[in-house]
Image 1 (spheres, rainbow, N blue to C red):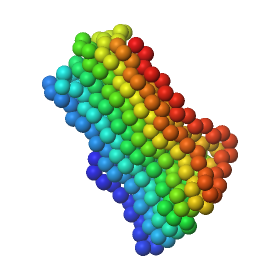
Image 2: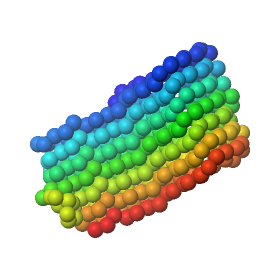
Image 3: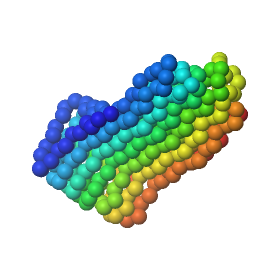
Image 4: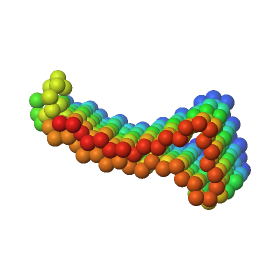
Length: 278
């Protein structure tokens, strides 16, 4: 993927009555006879600089990636998620009438004749850089930086792909105000499975899984208010195979050092690890 940017600067106002979609995903090509292509997510970002304002109905940033599917012993394509970012400088304002989705997830390519591809999650982030910044979202916020390994199946003993999650975070390091109906941040790693033709028996080794970072941080005098719920998932699920994959959970965090966080109903954080069956 390349770069898709909306930049509101110099005390300007950008007002979009409809939905806004910034796309910089990457998709690797499929290949039956050789190695499949890798997919690399790019940069999808909204930058709101000093004293500028962006009003929009809904917002989606997509820097996700998918590896190509293979039928070759040379392997499925790897996938690396990119950087999906909403960034506010001092006194920047973002008003969203509905919801915000930021995707930097990655899915490795499947393979029916060898090893599957790895999936490496990227960064999905909302960052209020300085005091005076305001994010007001009437709907829900969804951040996805998960990494999912591809699955291997067939007559060979191909291994499932690694699932390595990235970072899904709302970050207020120096003040500011963040308001939304709910926040769901996902940075889960899922290793790919390895099964025989038909999917009934293990074949090669299951893919390893690493959880990432899923969090809401308020560090220096800011405030975050969620009318409904907060959920952060940084668990790891290793793949099934002839020798299941290893799993290591990540970090799911709800943190306030100086400032305040308010959650209207439930707060749920999880960073478990589940090794693969064999």
